[in-house]
Length: 185
Image (cartoon, rainbow, N blue to C red):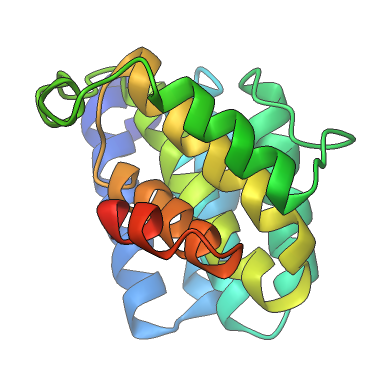
């Protein structure tokens, strides 16, 4: 009944409880909370927080491939499809360098802050993917980095944006562009 009478409060409390359950490693409670929000949430966006937490729990409980697949599915639903778009690291770095060539350091440092809650959650999923893919699909990491930077330039900087730039710098260094790579780290 609380979902009907106090929807916003219920959603916020369930999101916070799910975050606590994730922090405590309580997957049973997290799963229950996820199922409740999934059943009573009014929109896909309302379900994103708890879906992110359950995806994190998968990654933490030795189910990294499932976590990555779920993250890719959610991003595709949000219009950010990374499947079938796997360029080589060299190609992703080249394209990203080209994209950034139109920006000065001051332009990048002064990009507005990301405010769209759905896009912020998408960036959280991308950040989680970057870390997970580095472990089991390293060939896919560069396209995740590229998308983080593209979305940051288009929609504003989020707390995940620096992850994209740091990974760009490390990929550039790995390809032999040490000085240029250091610029972003």
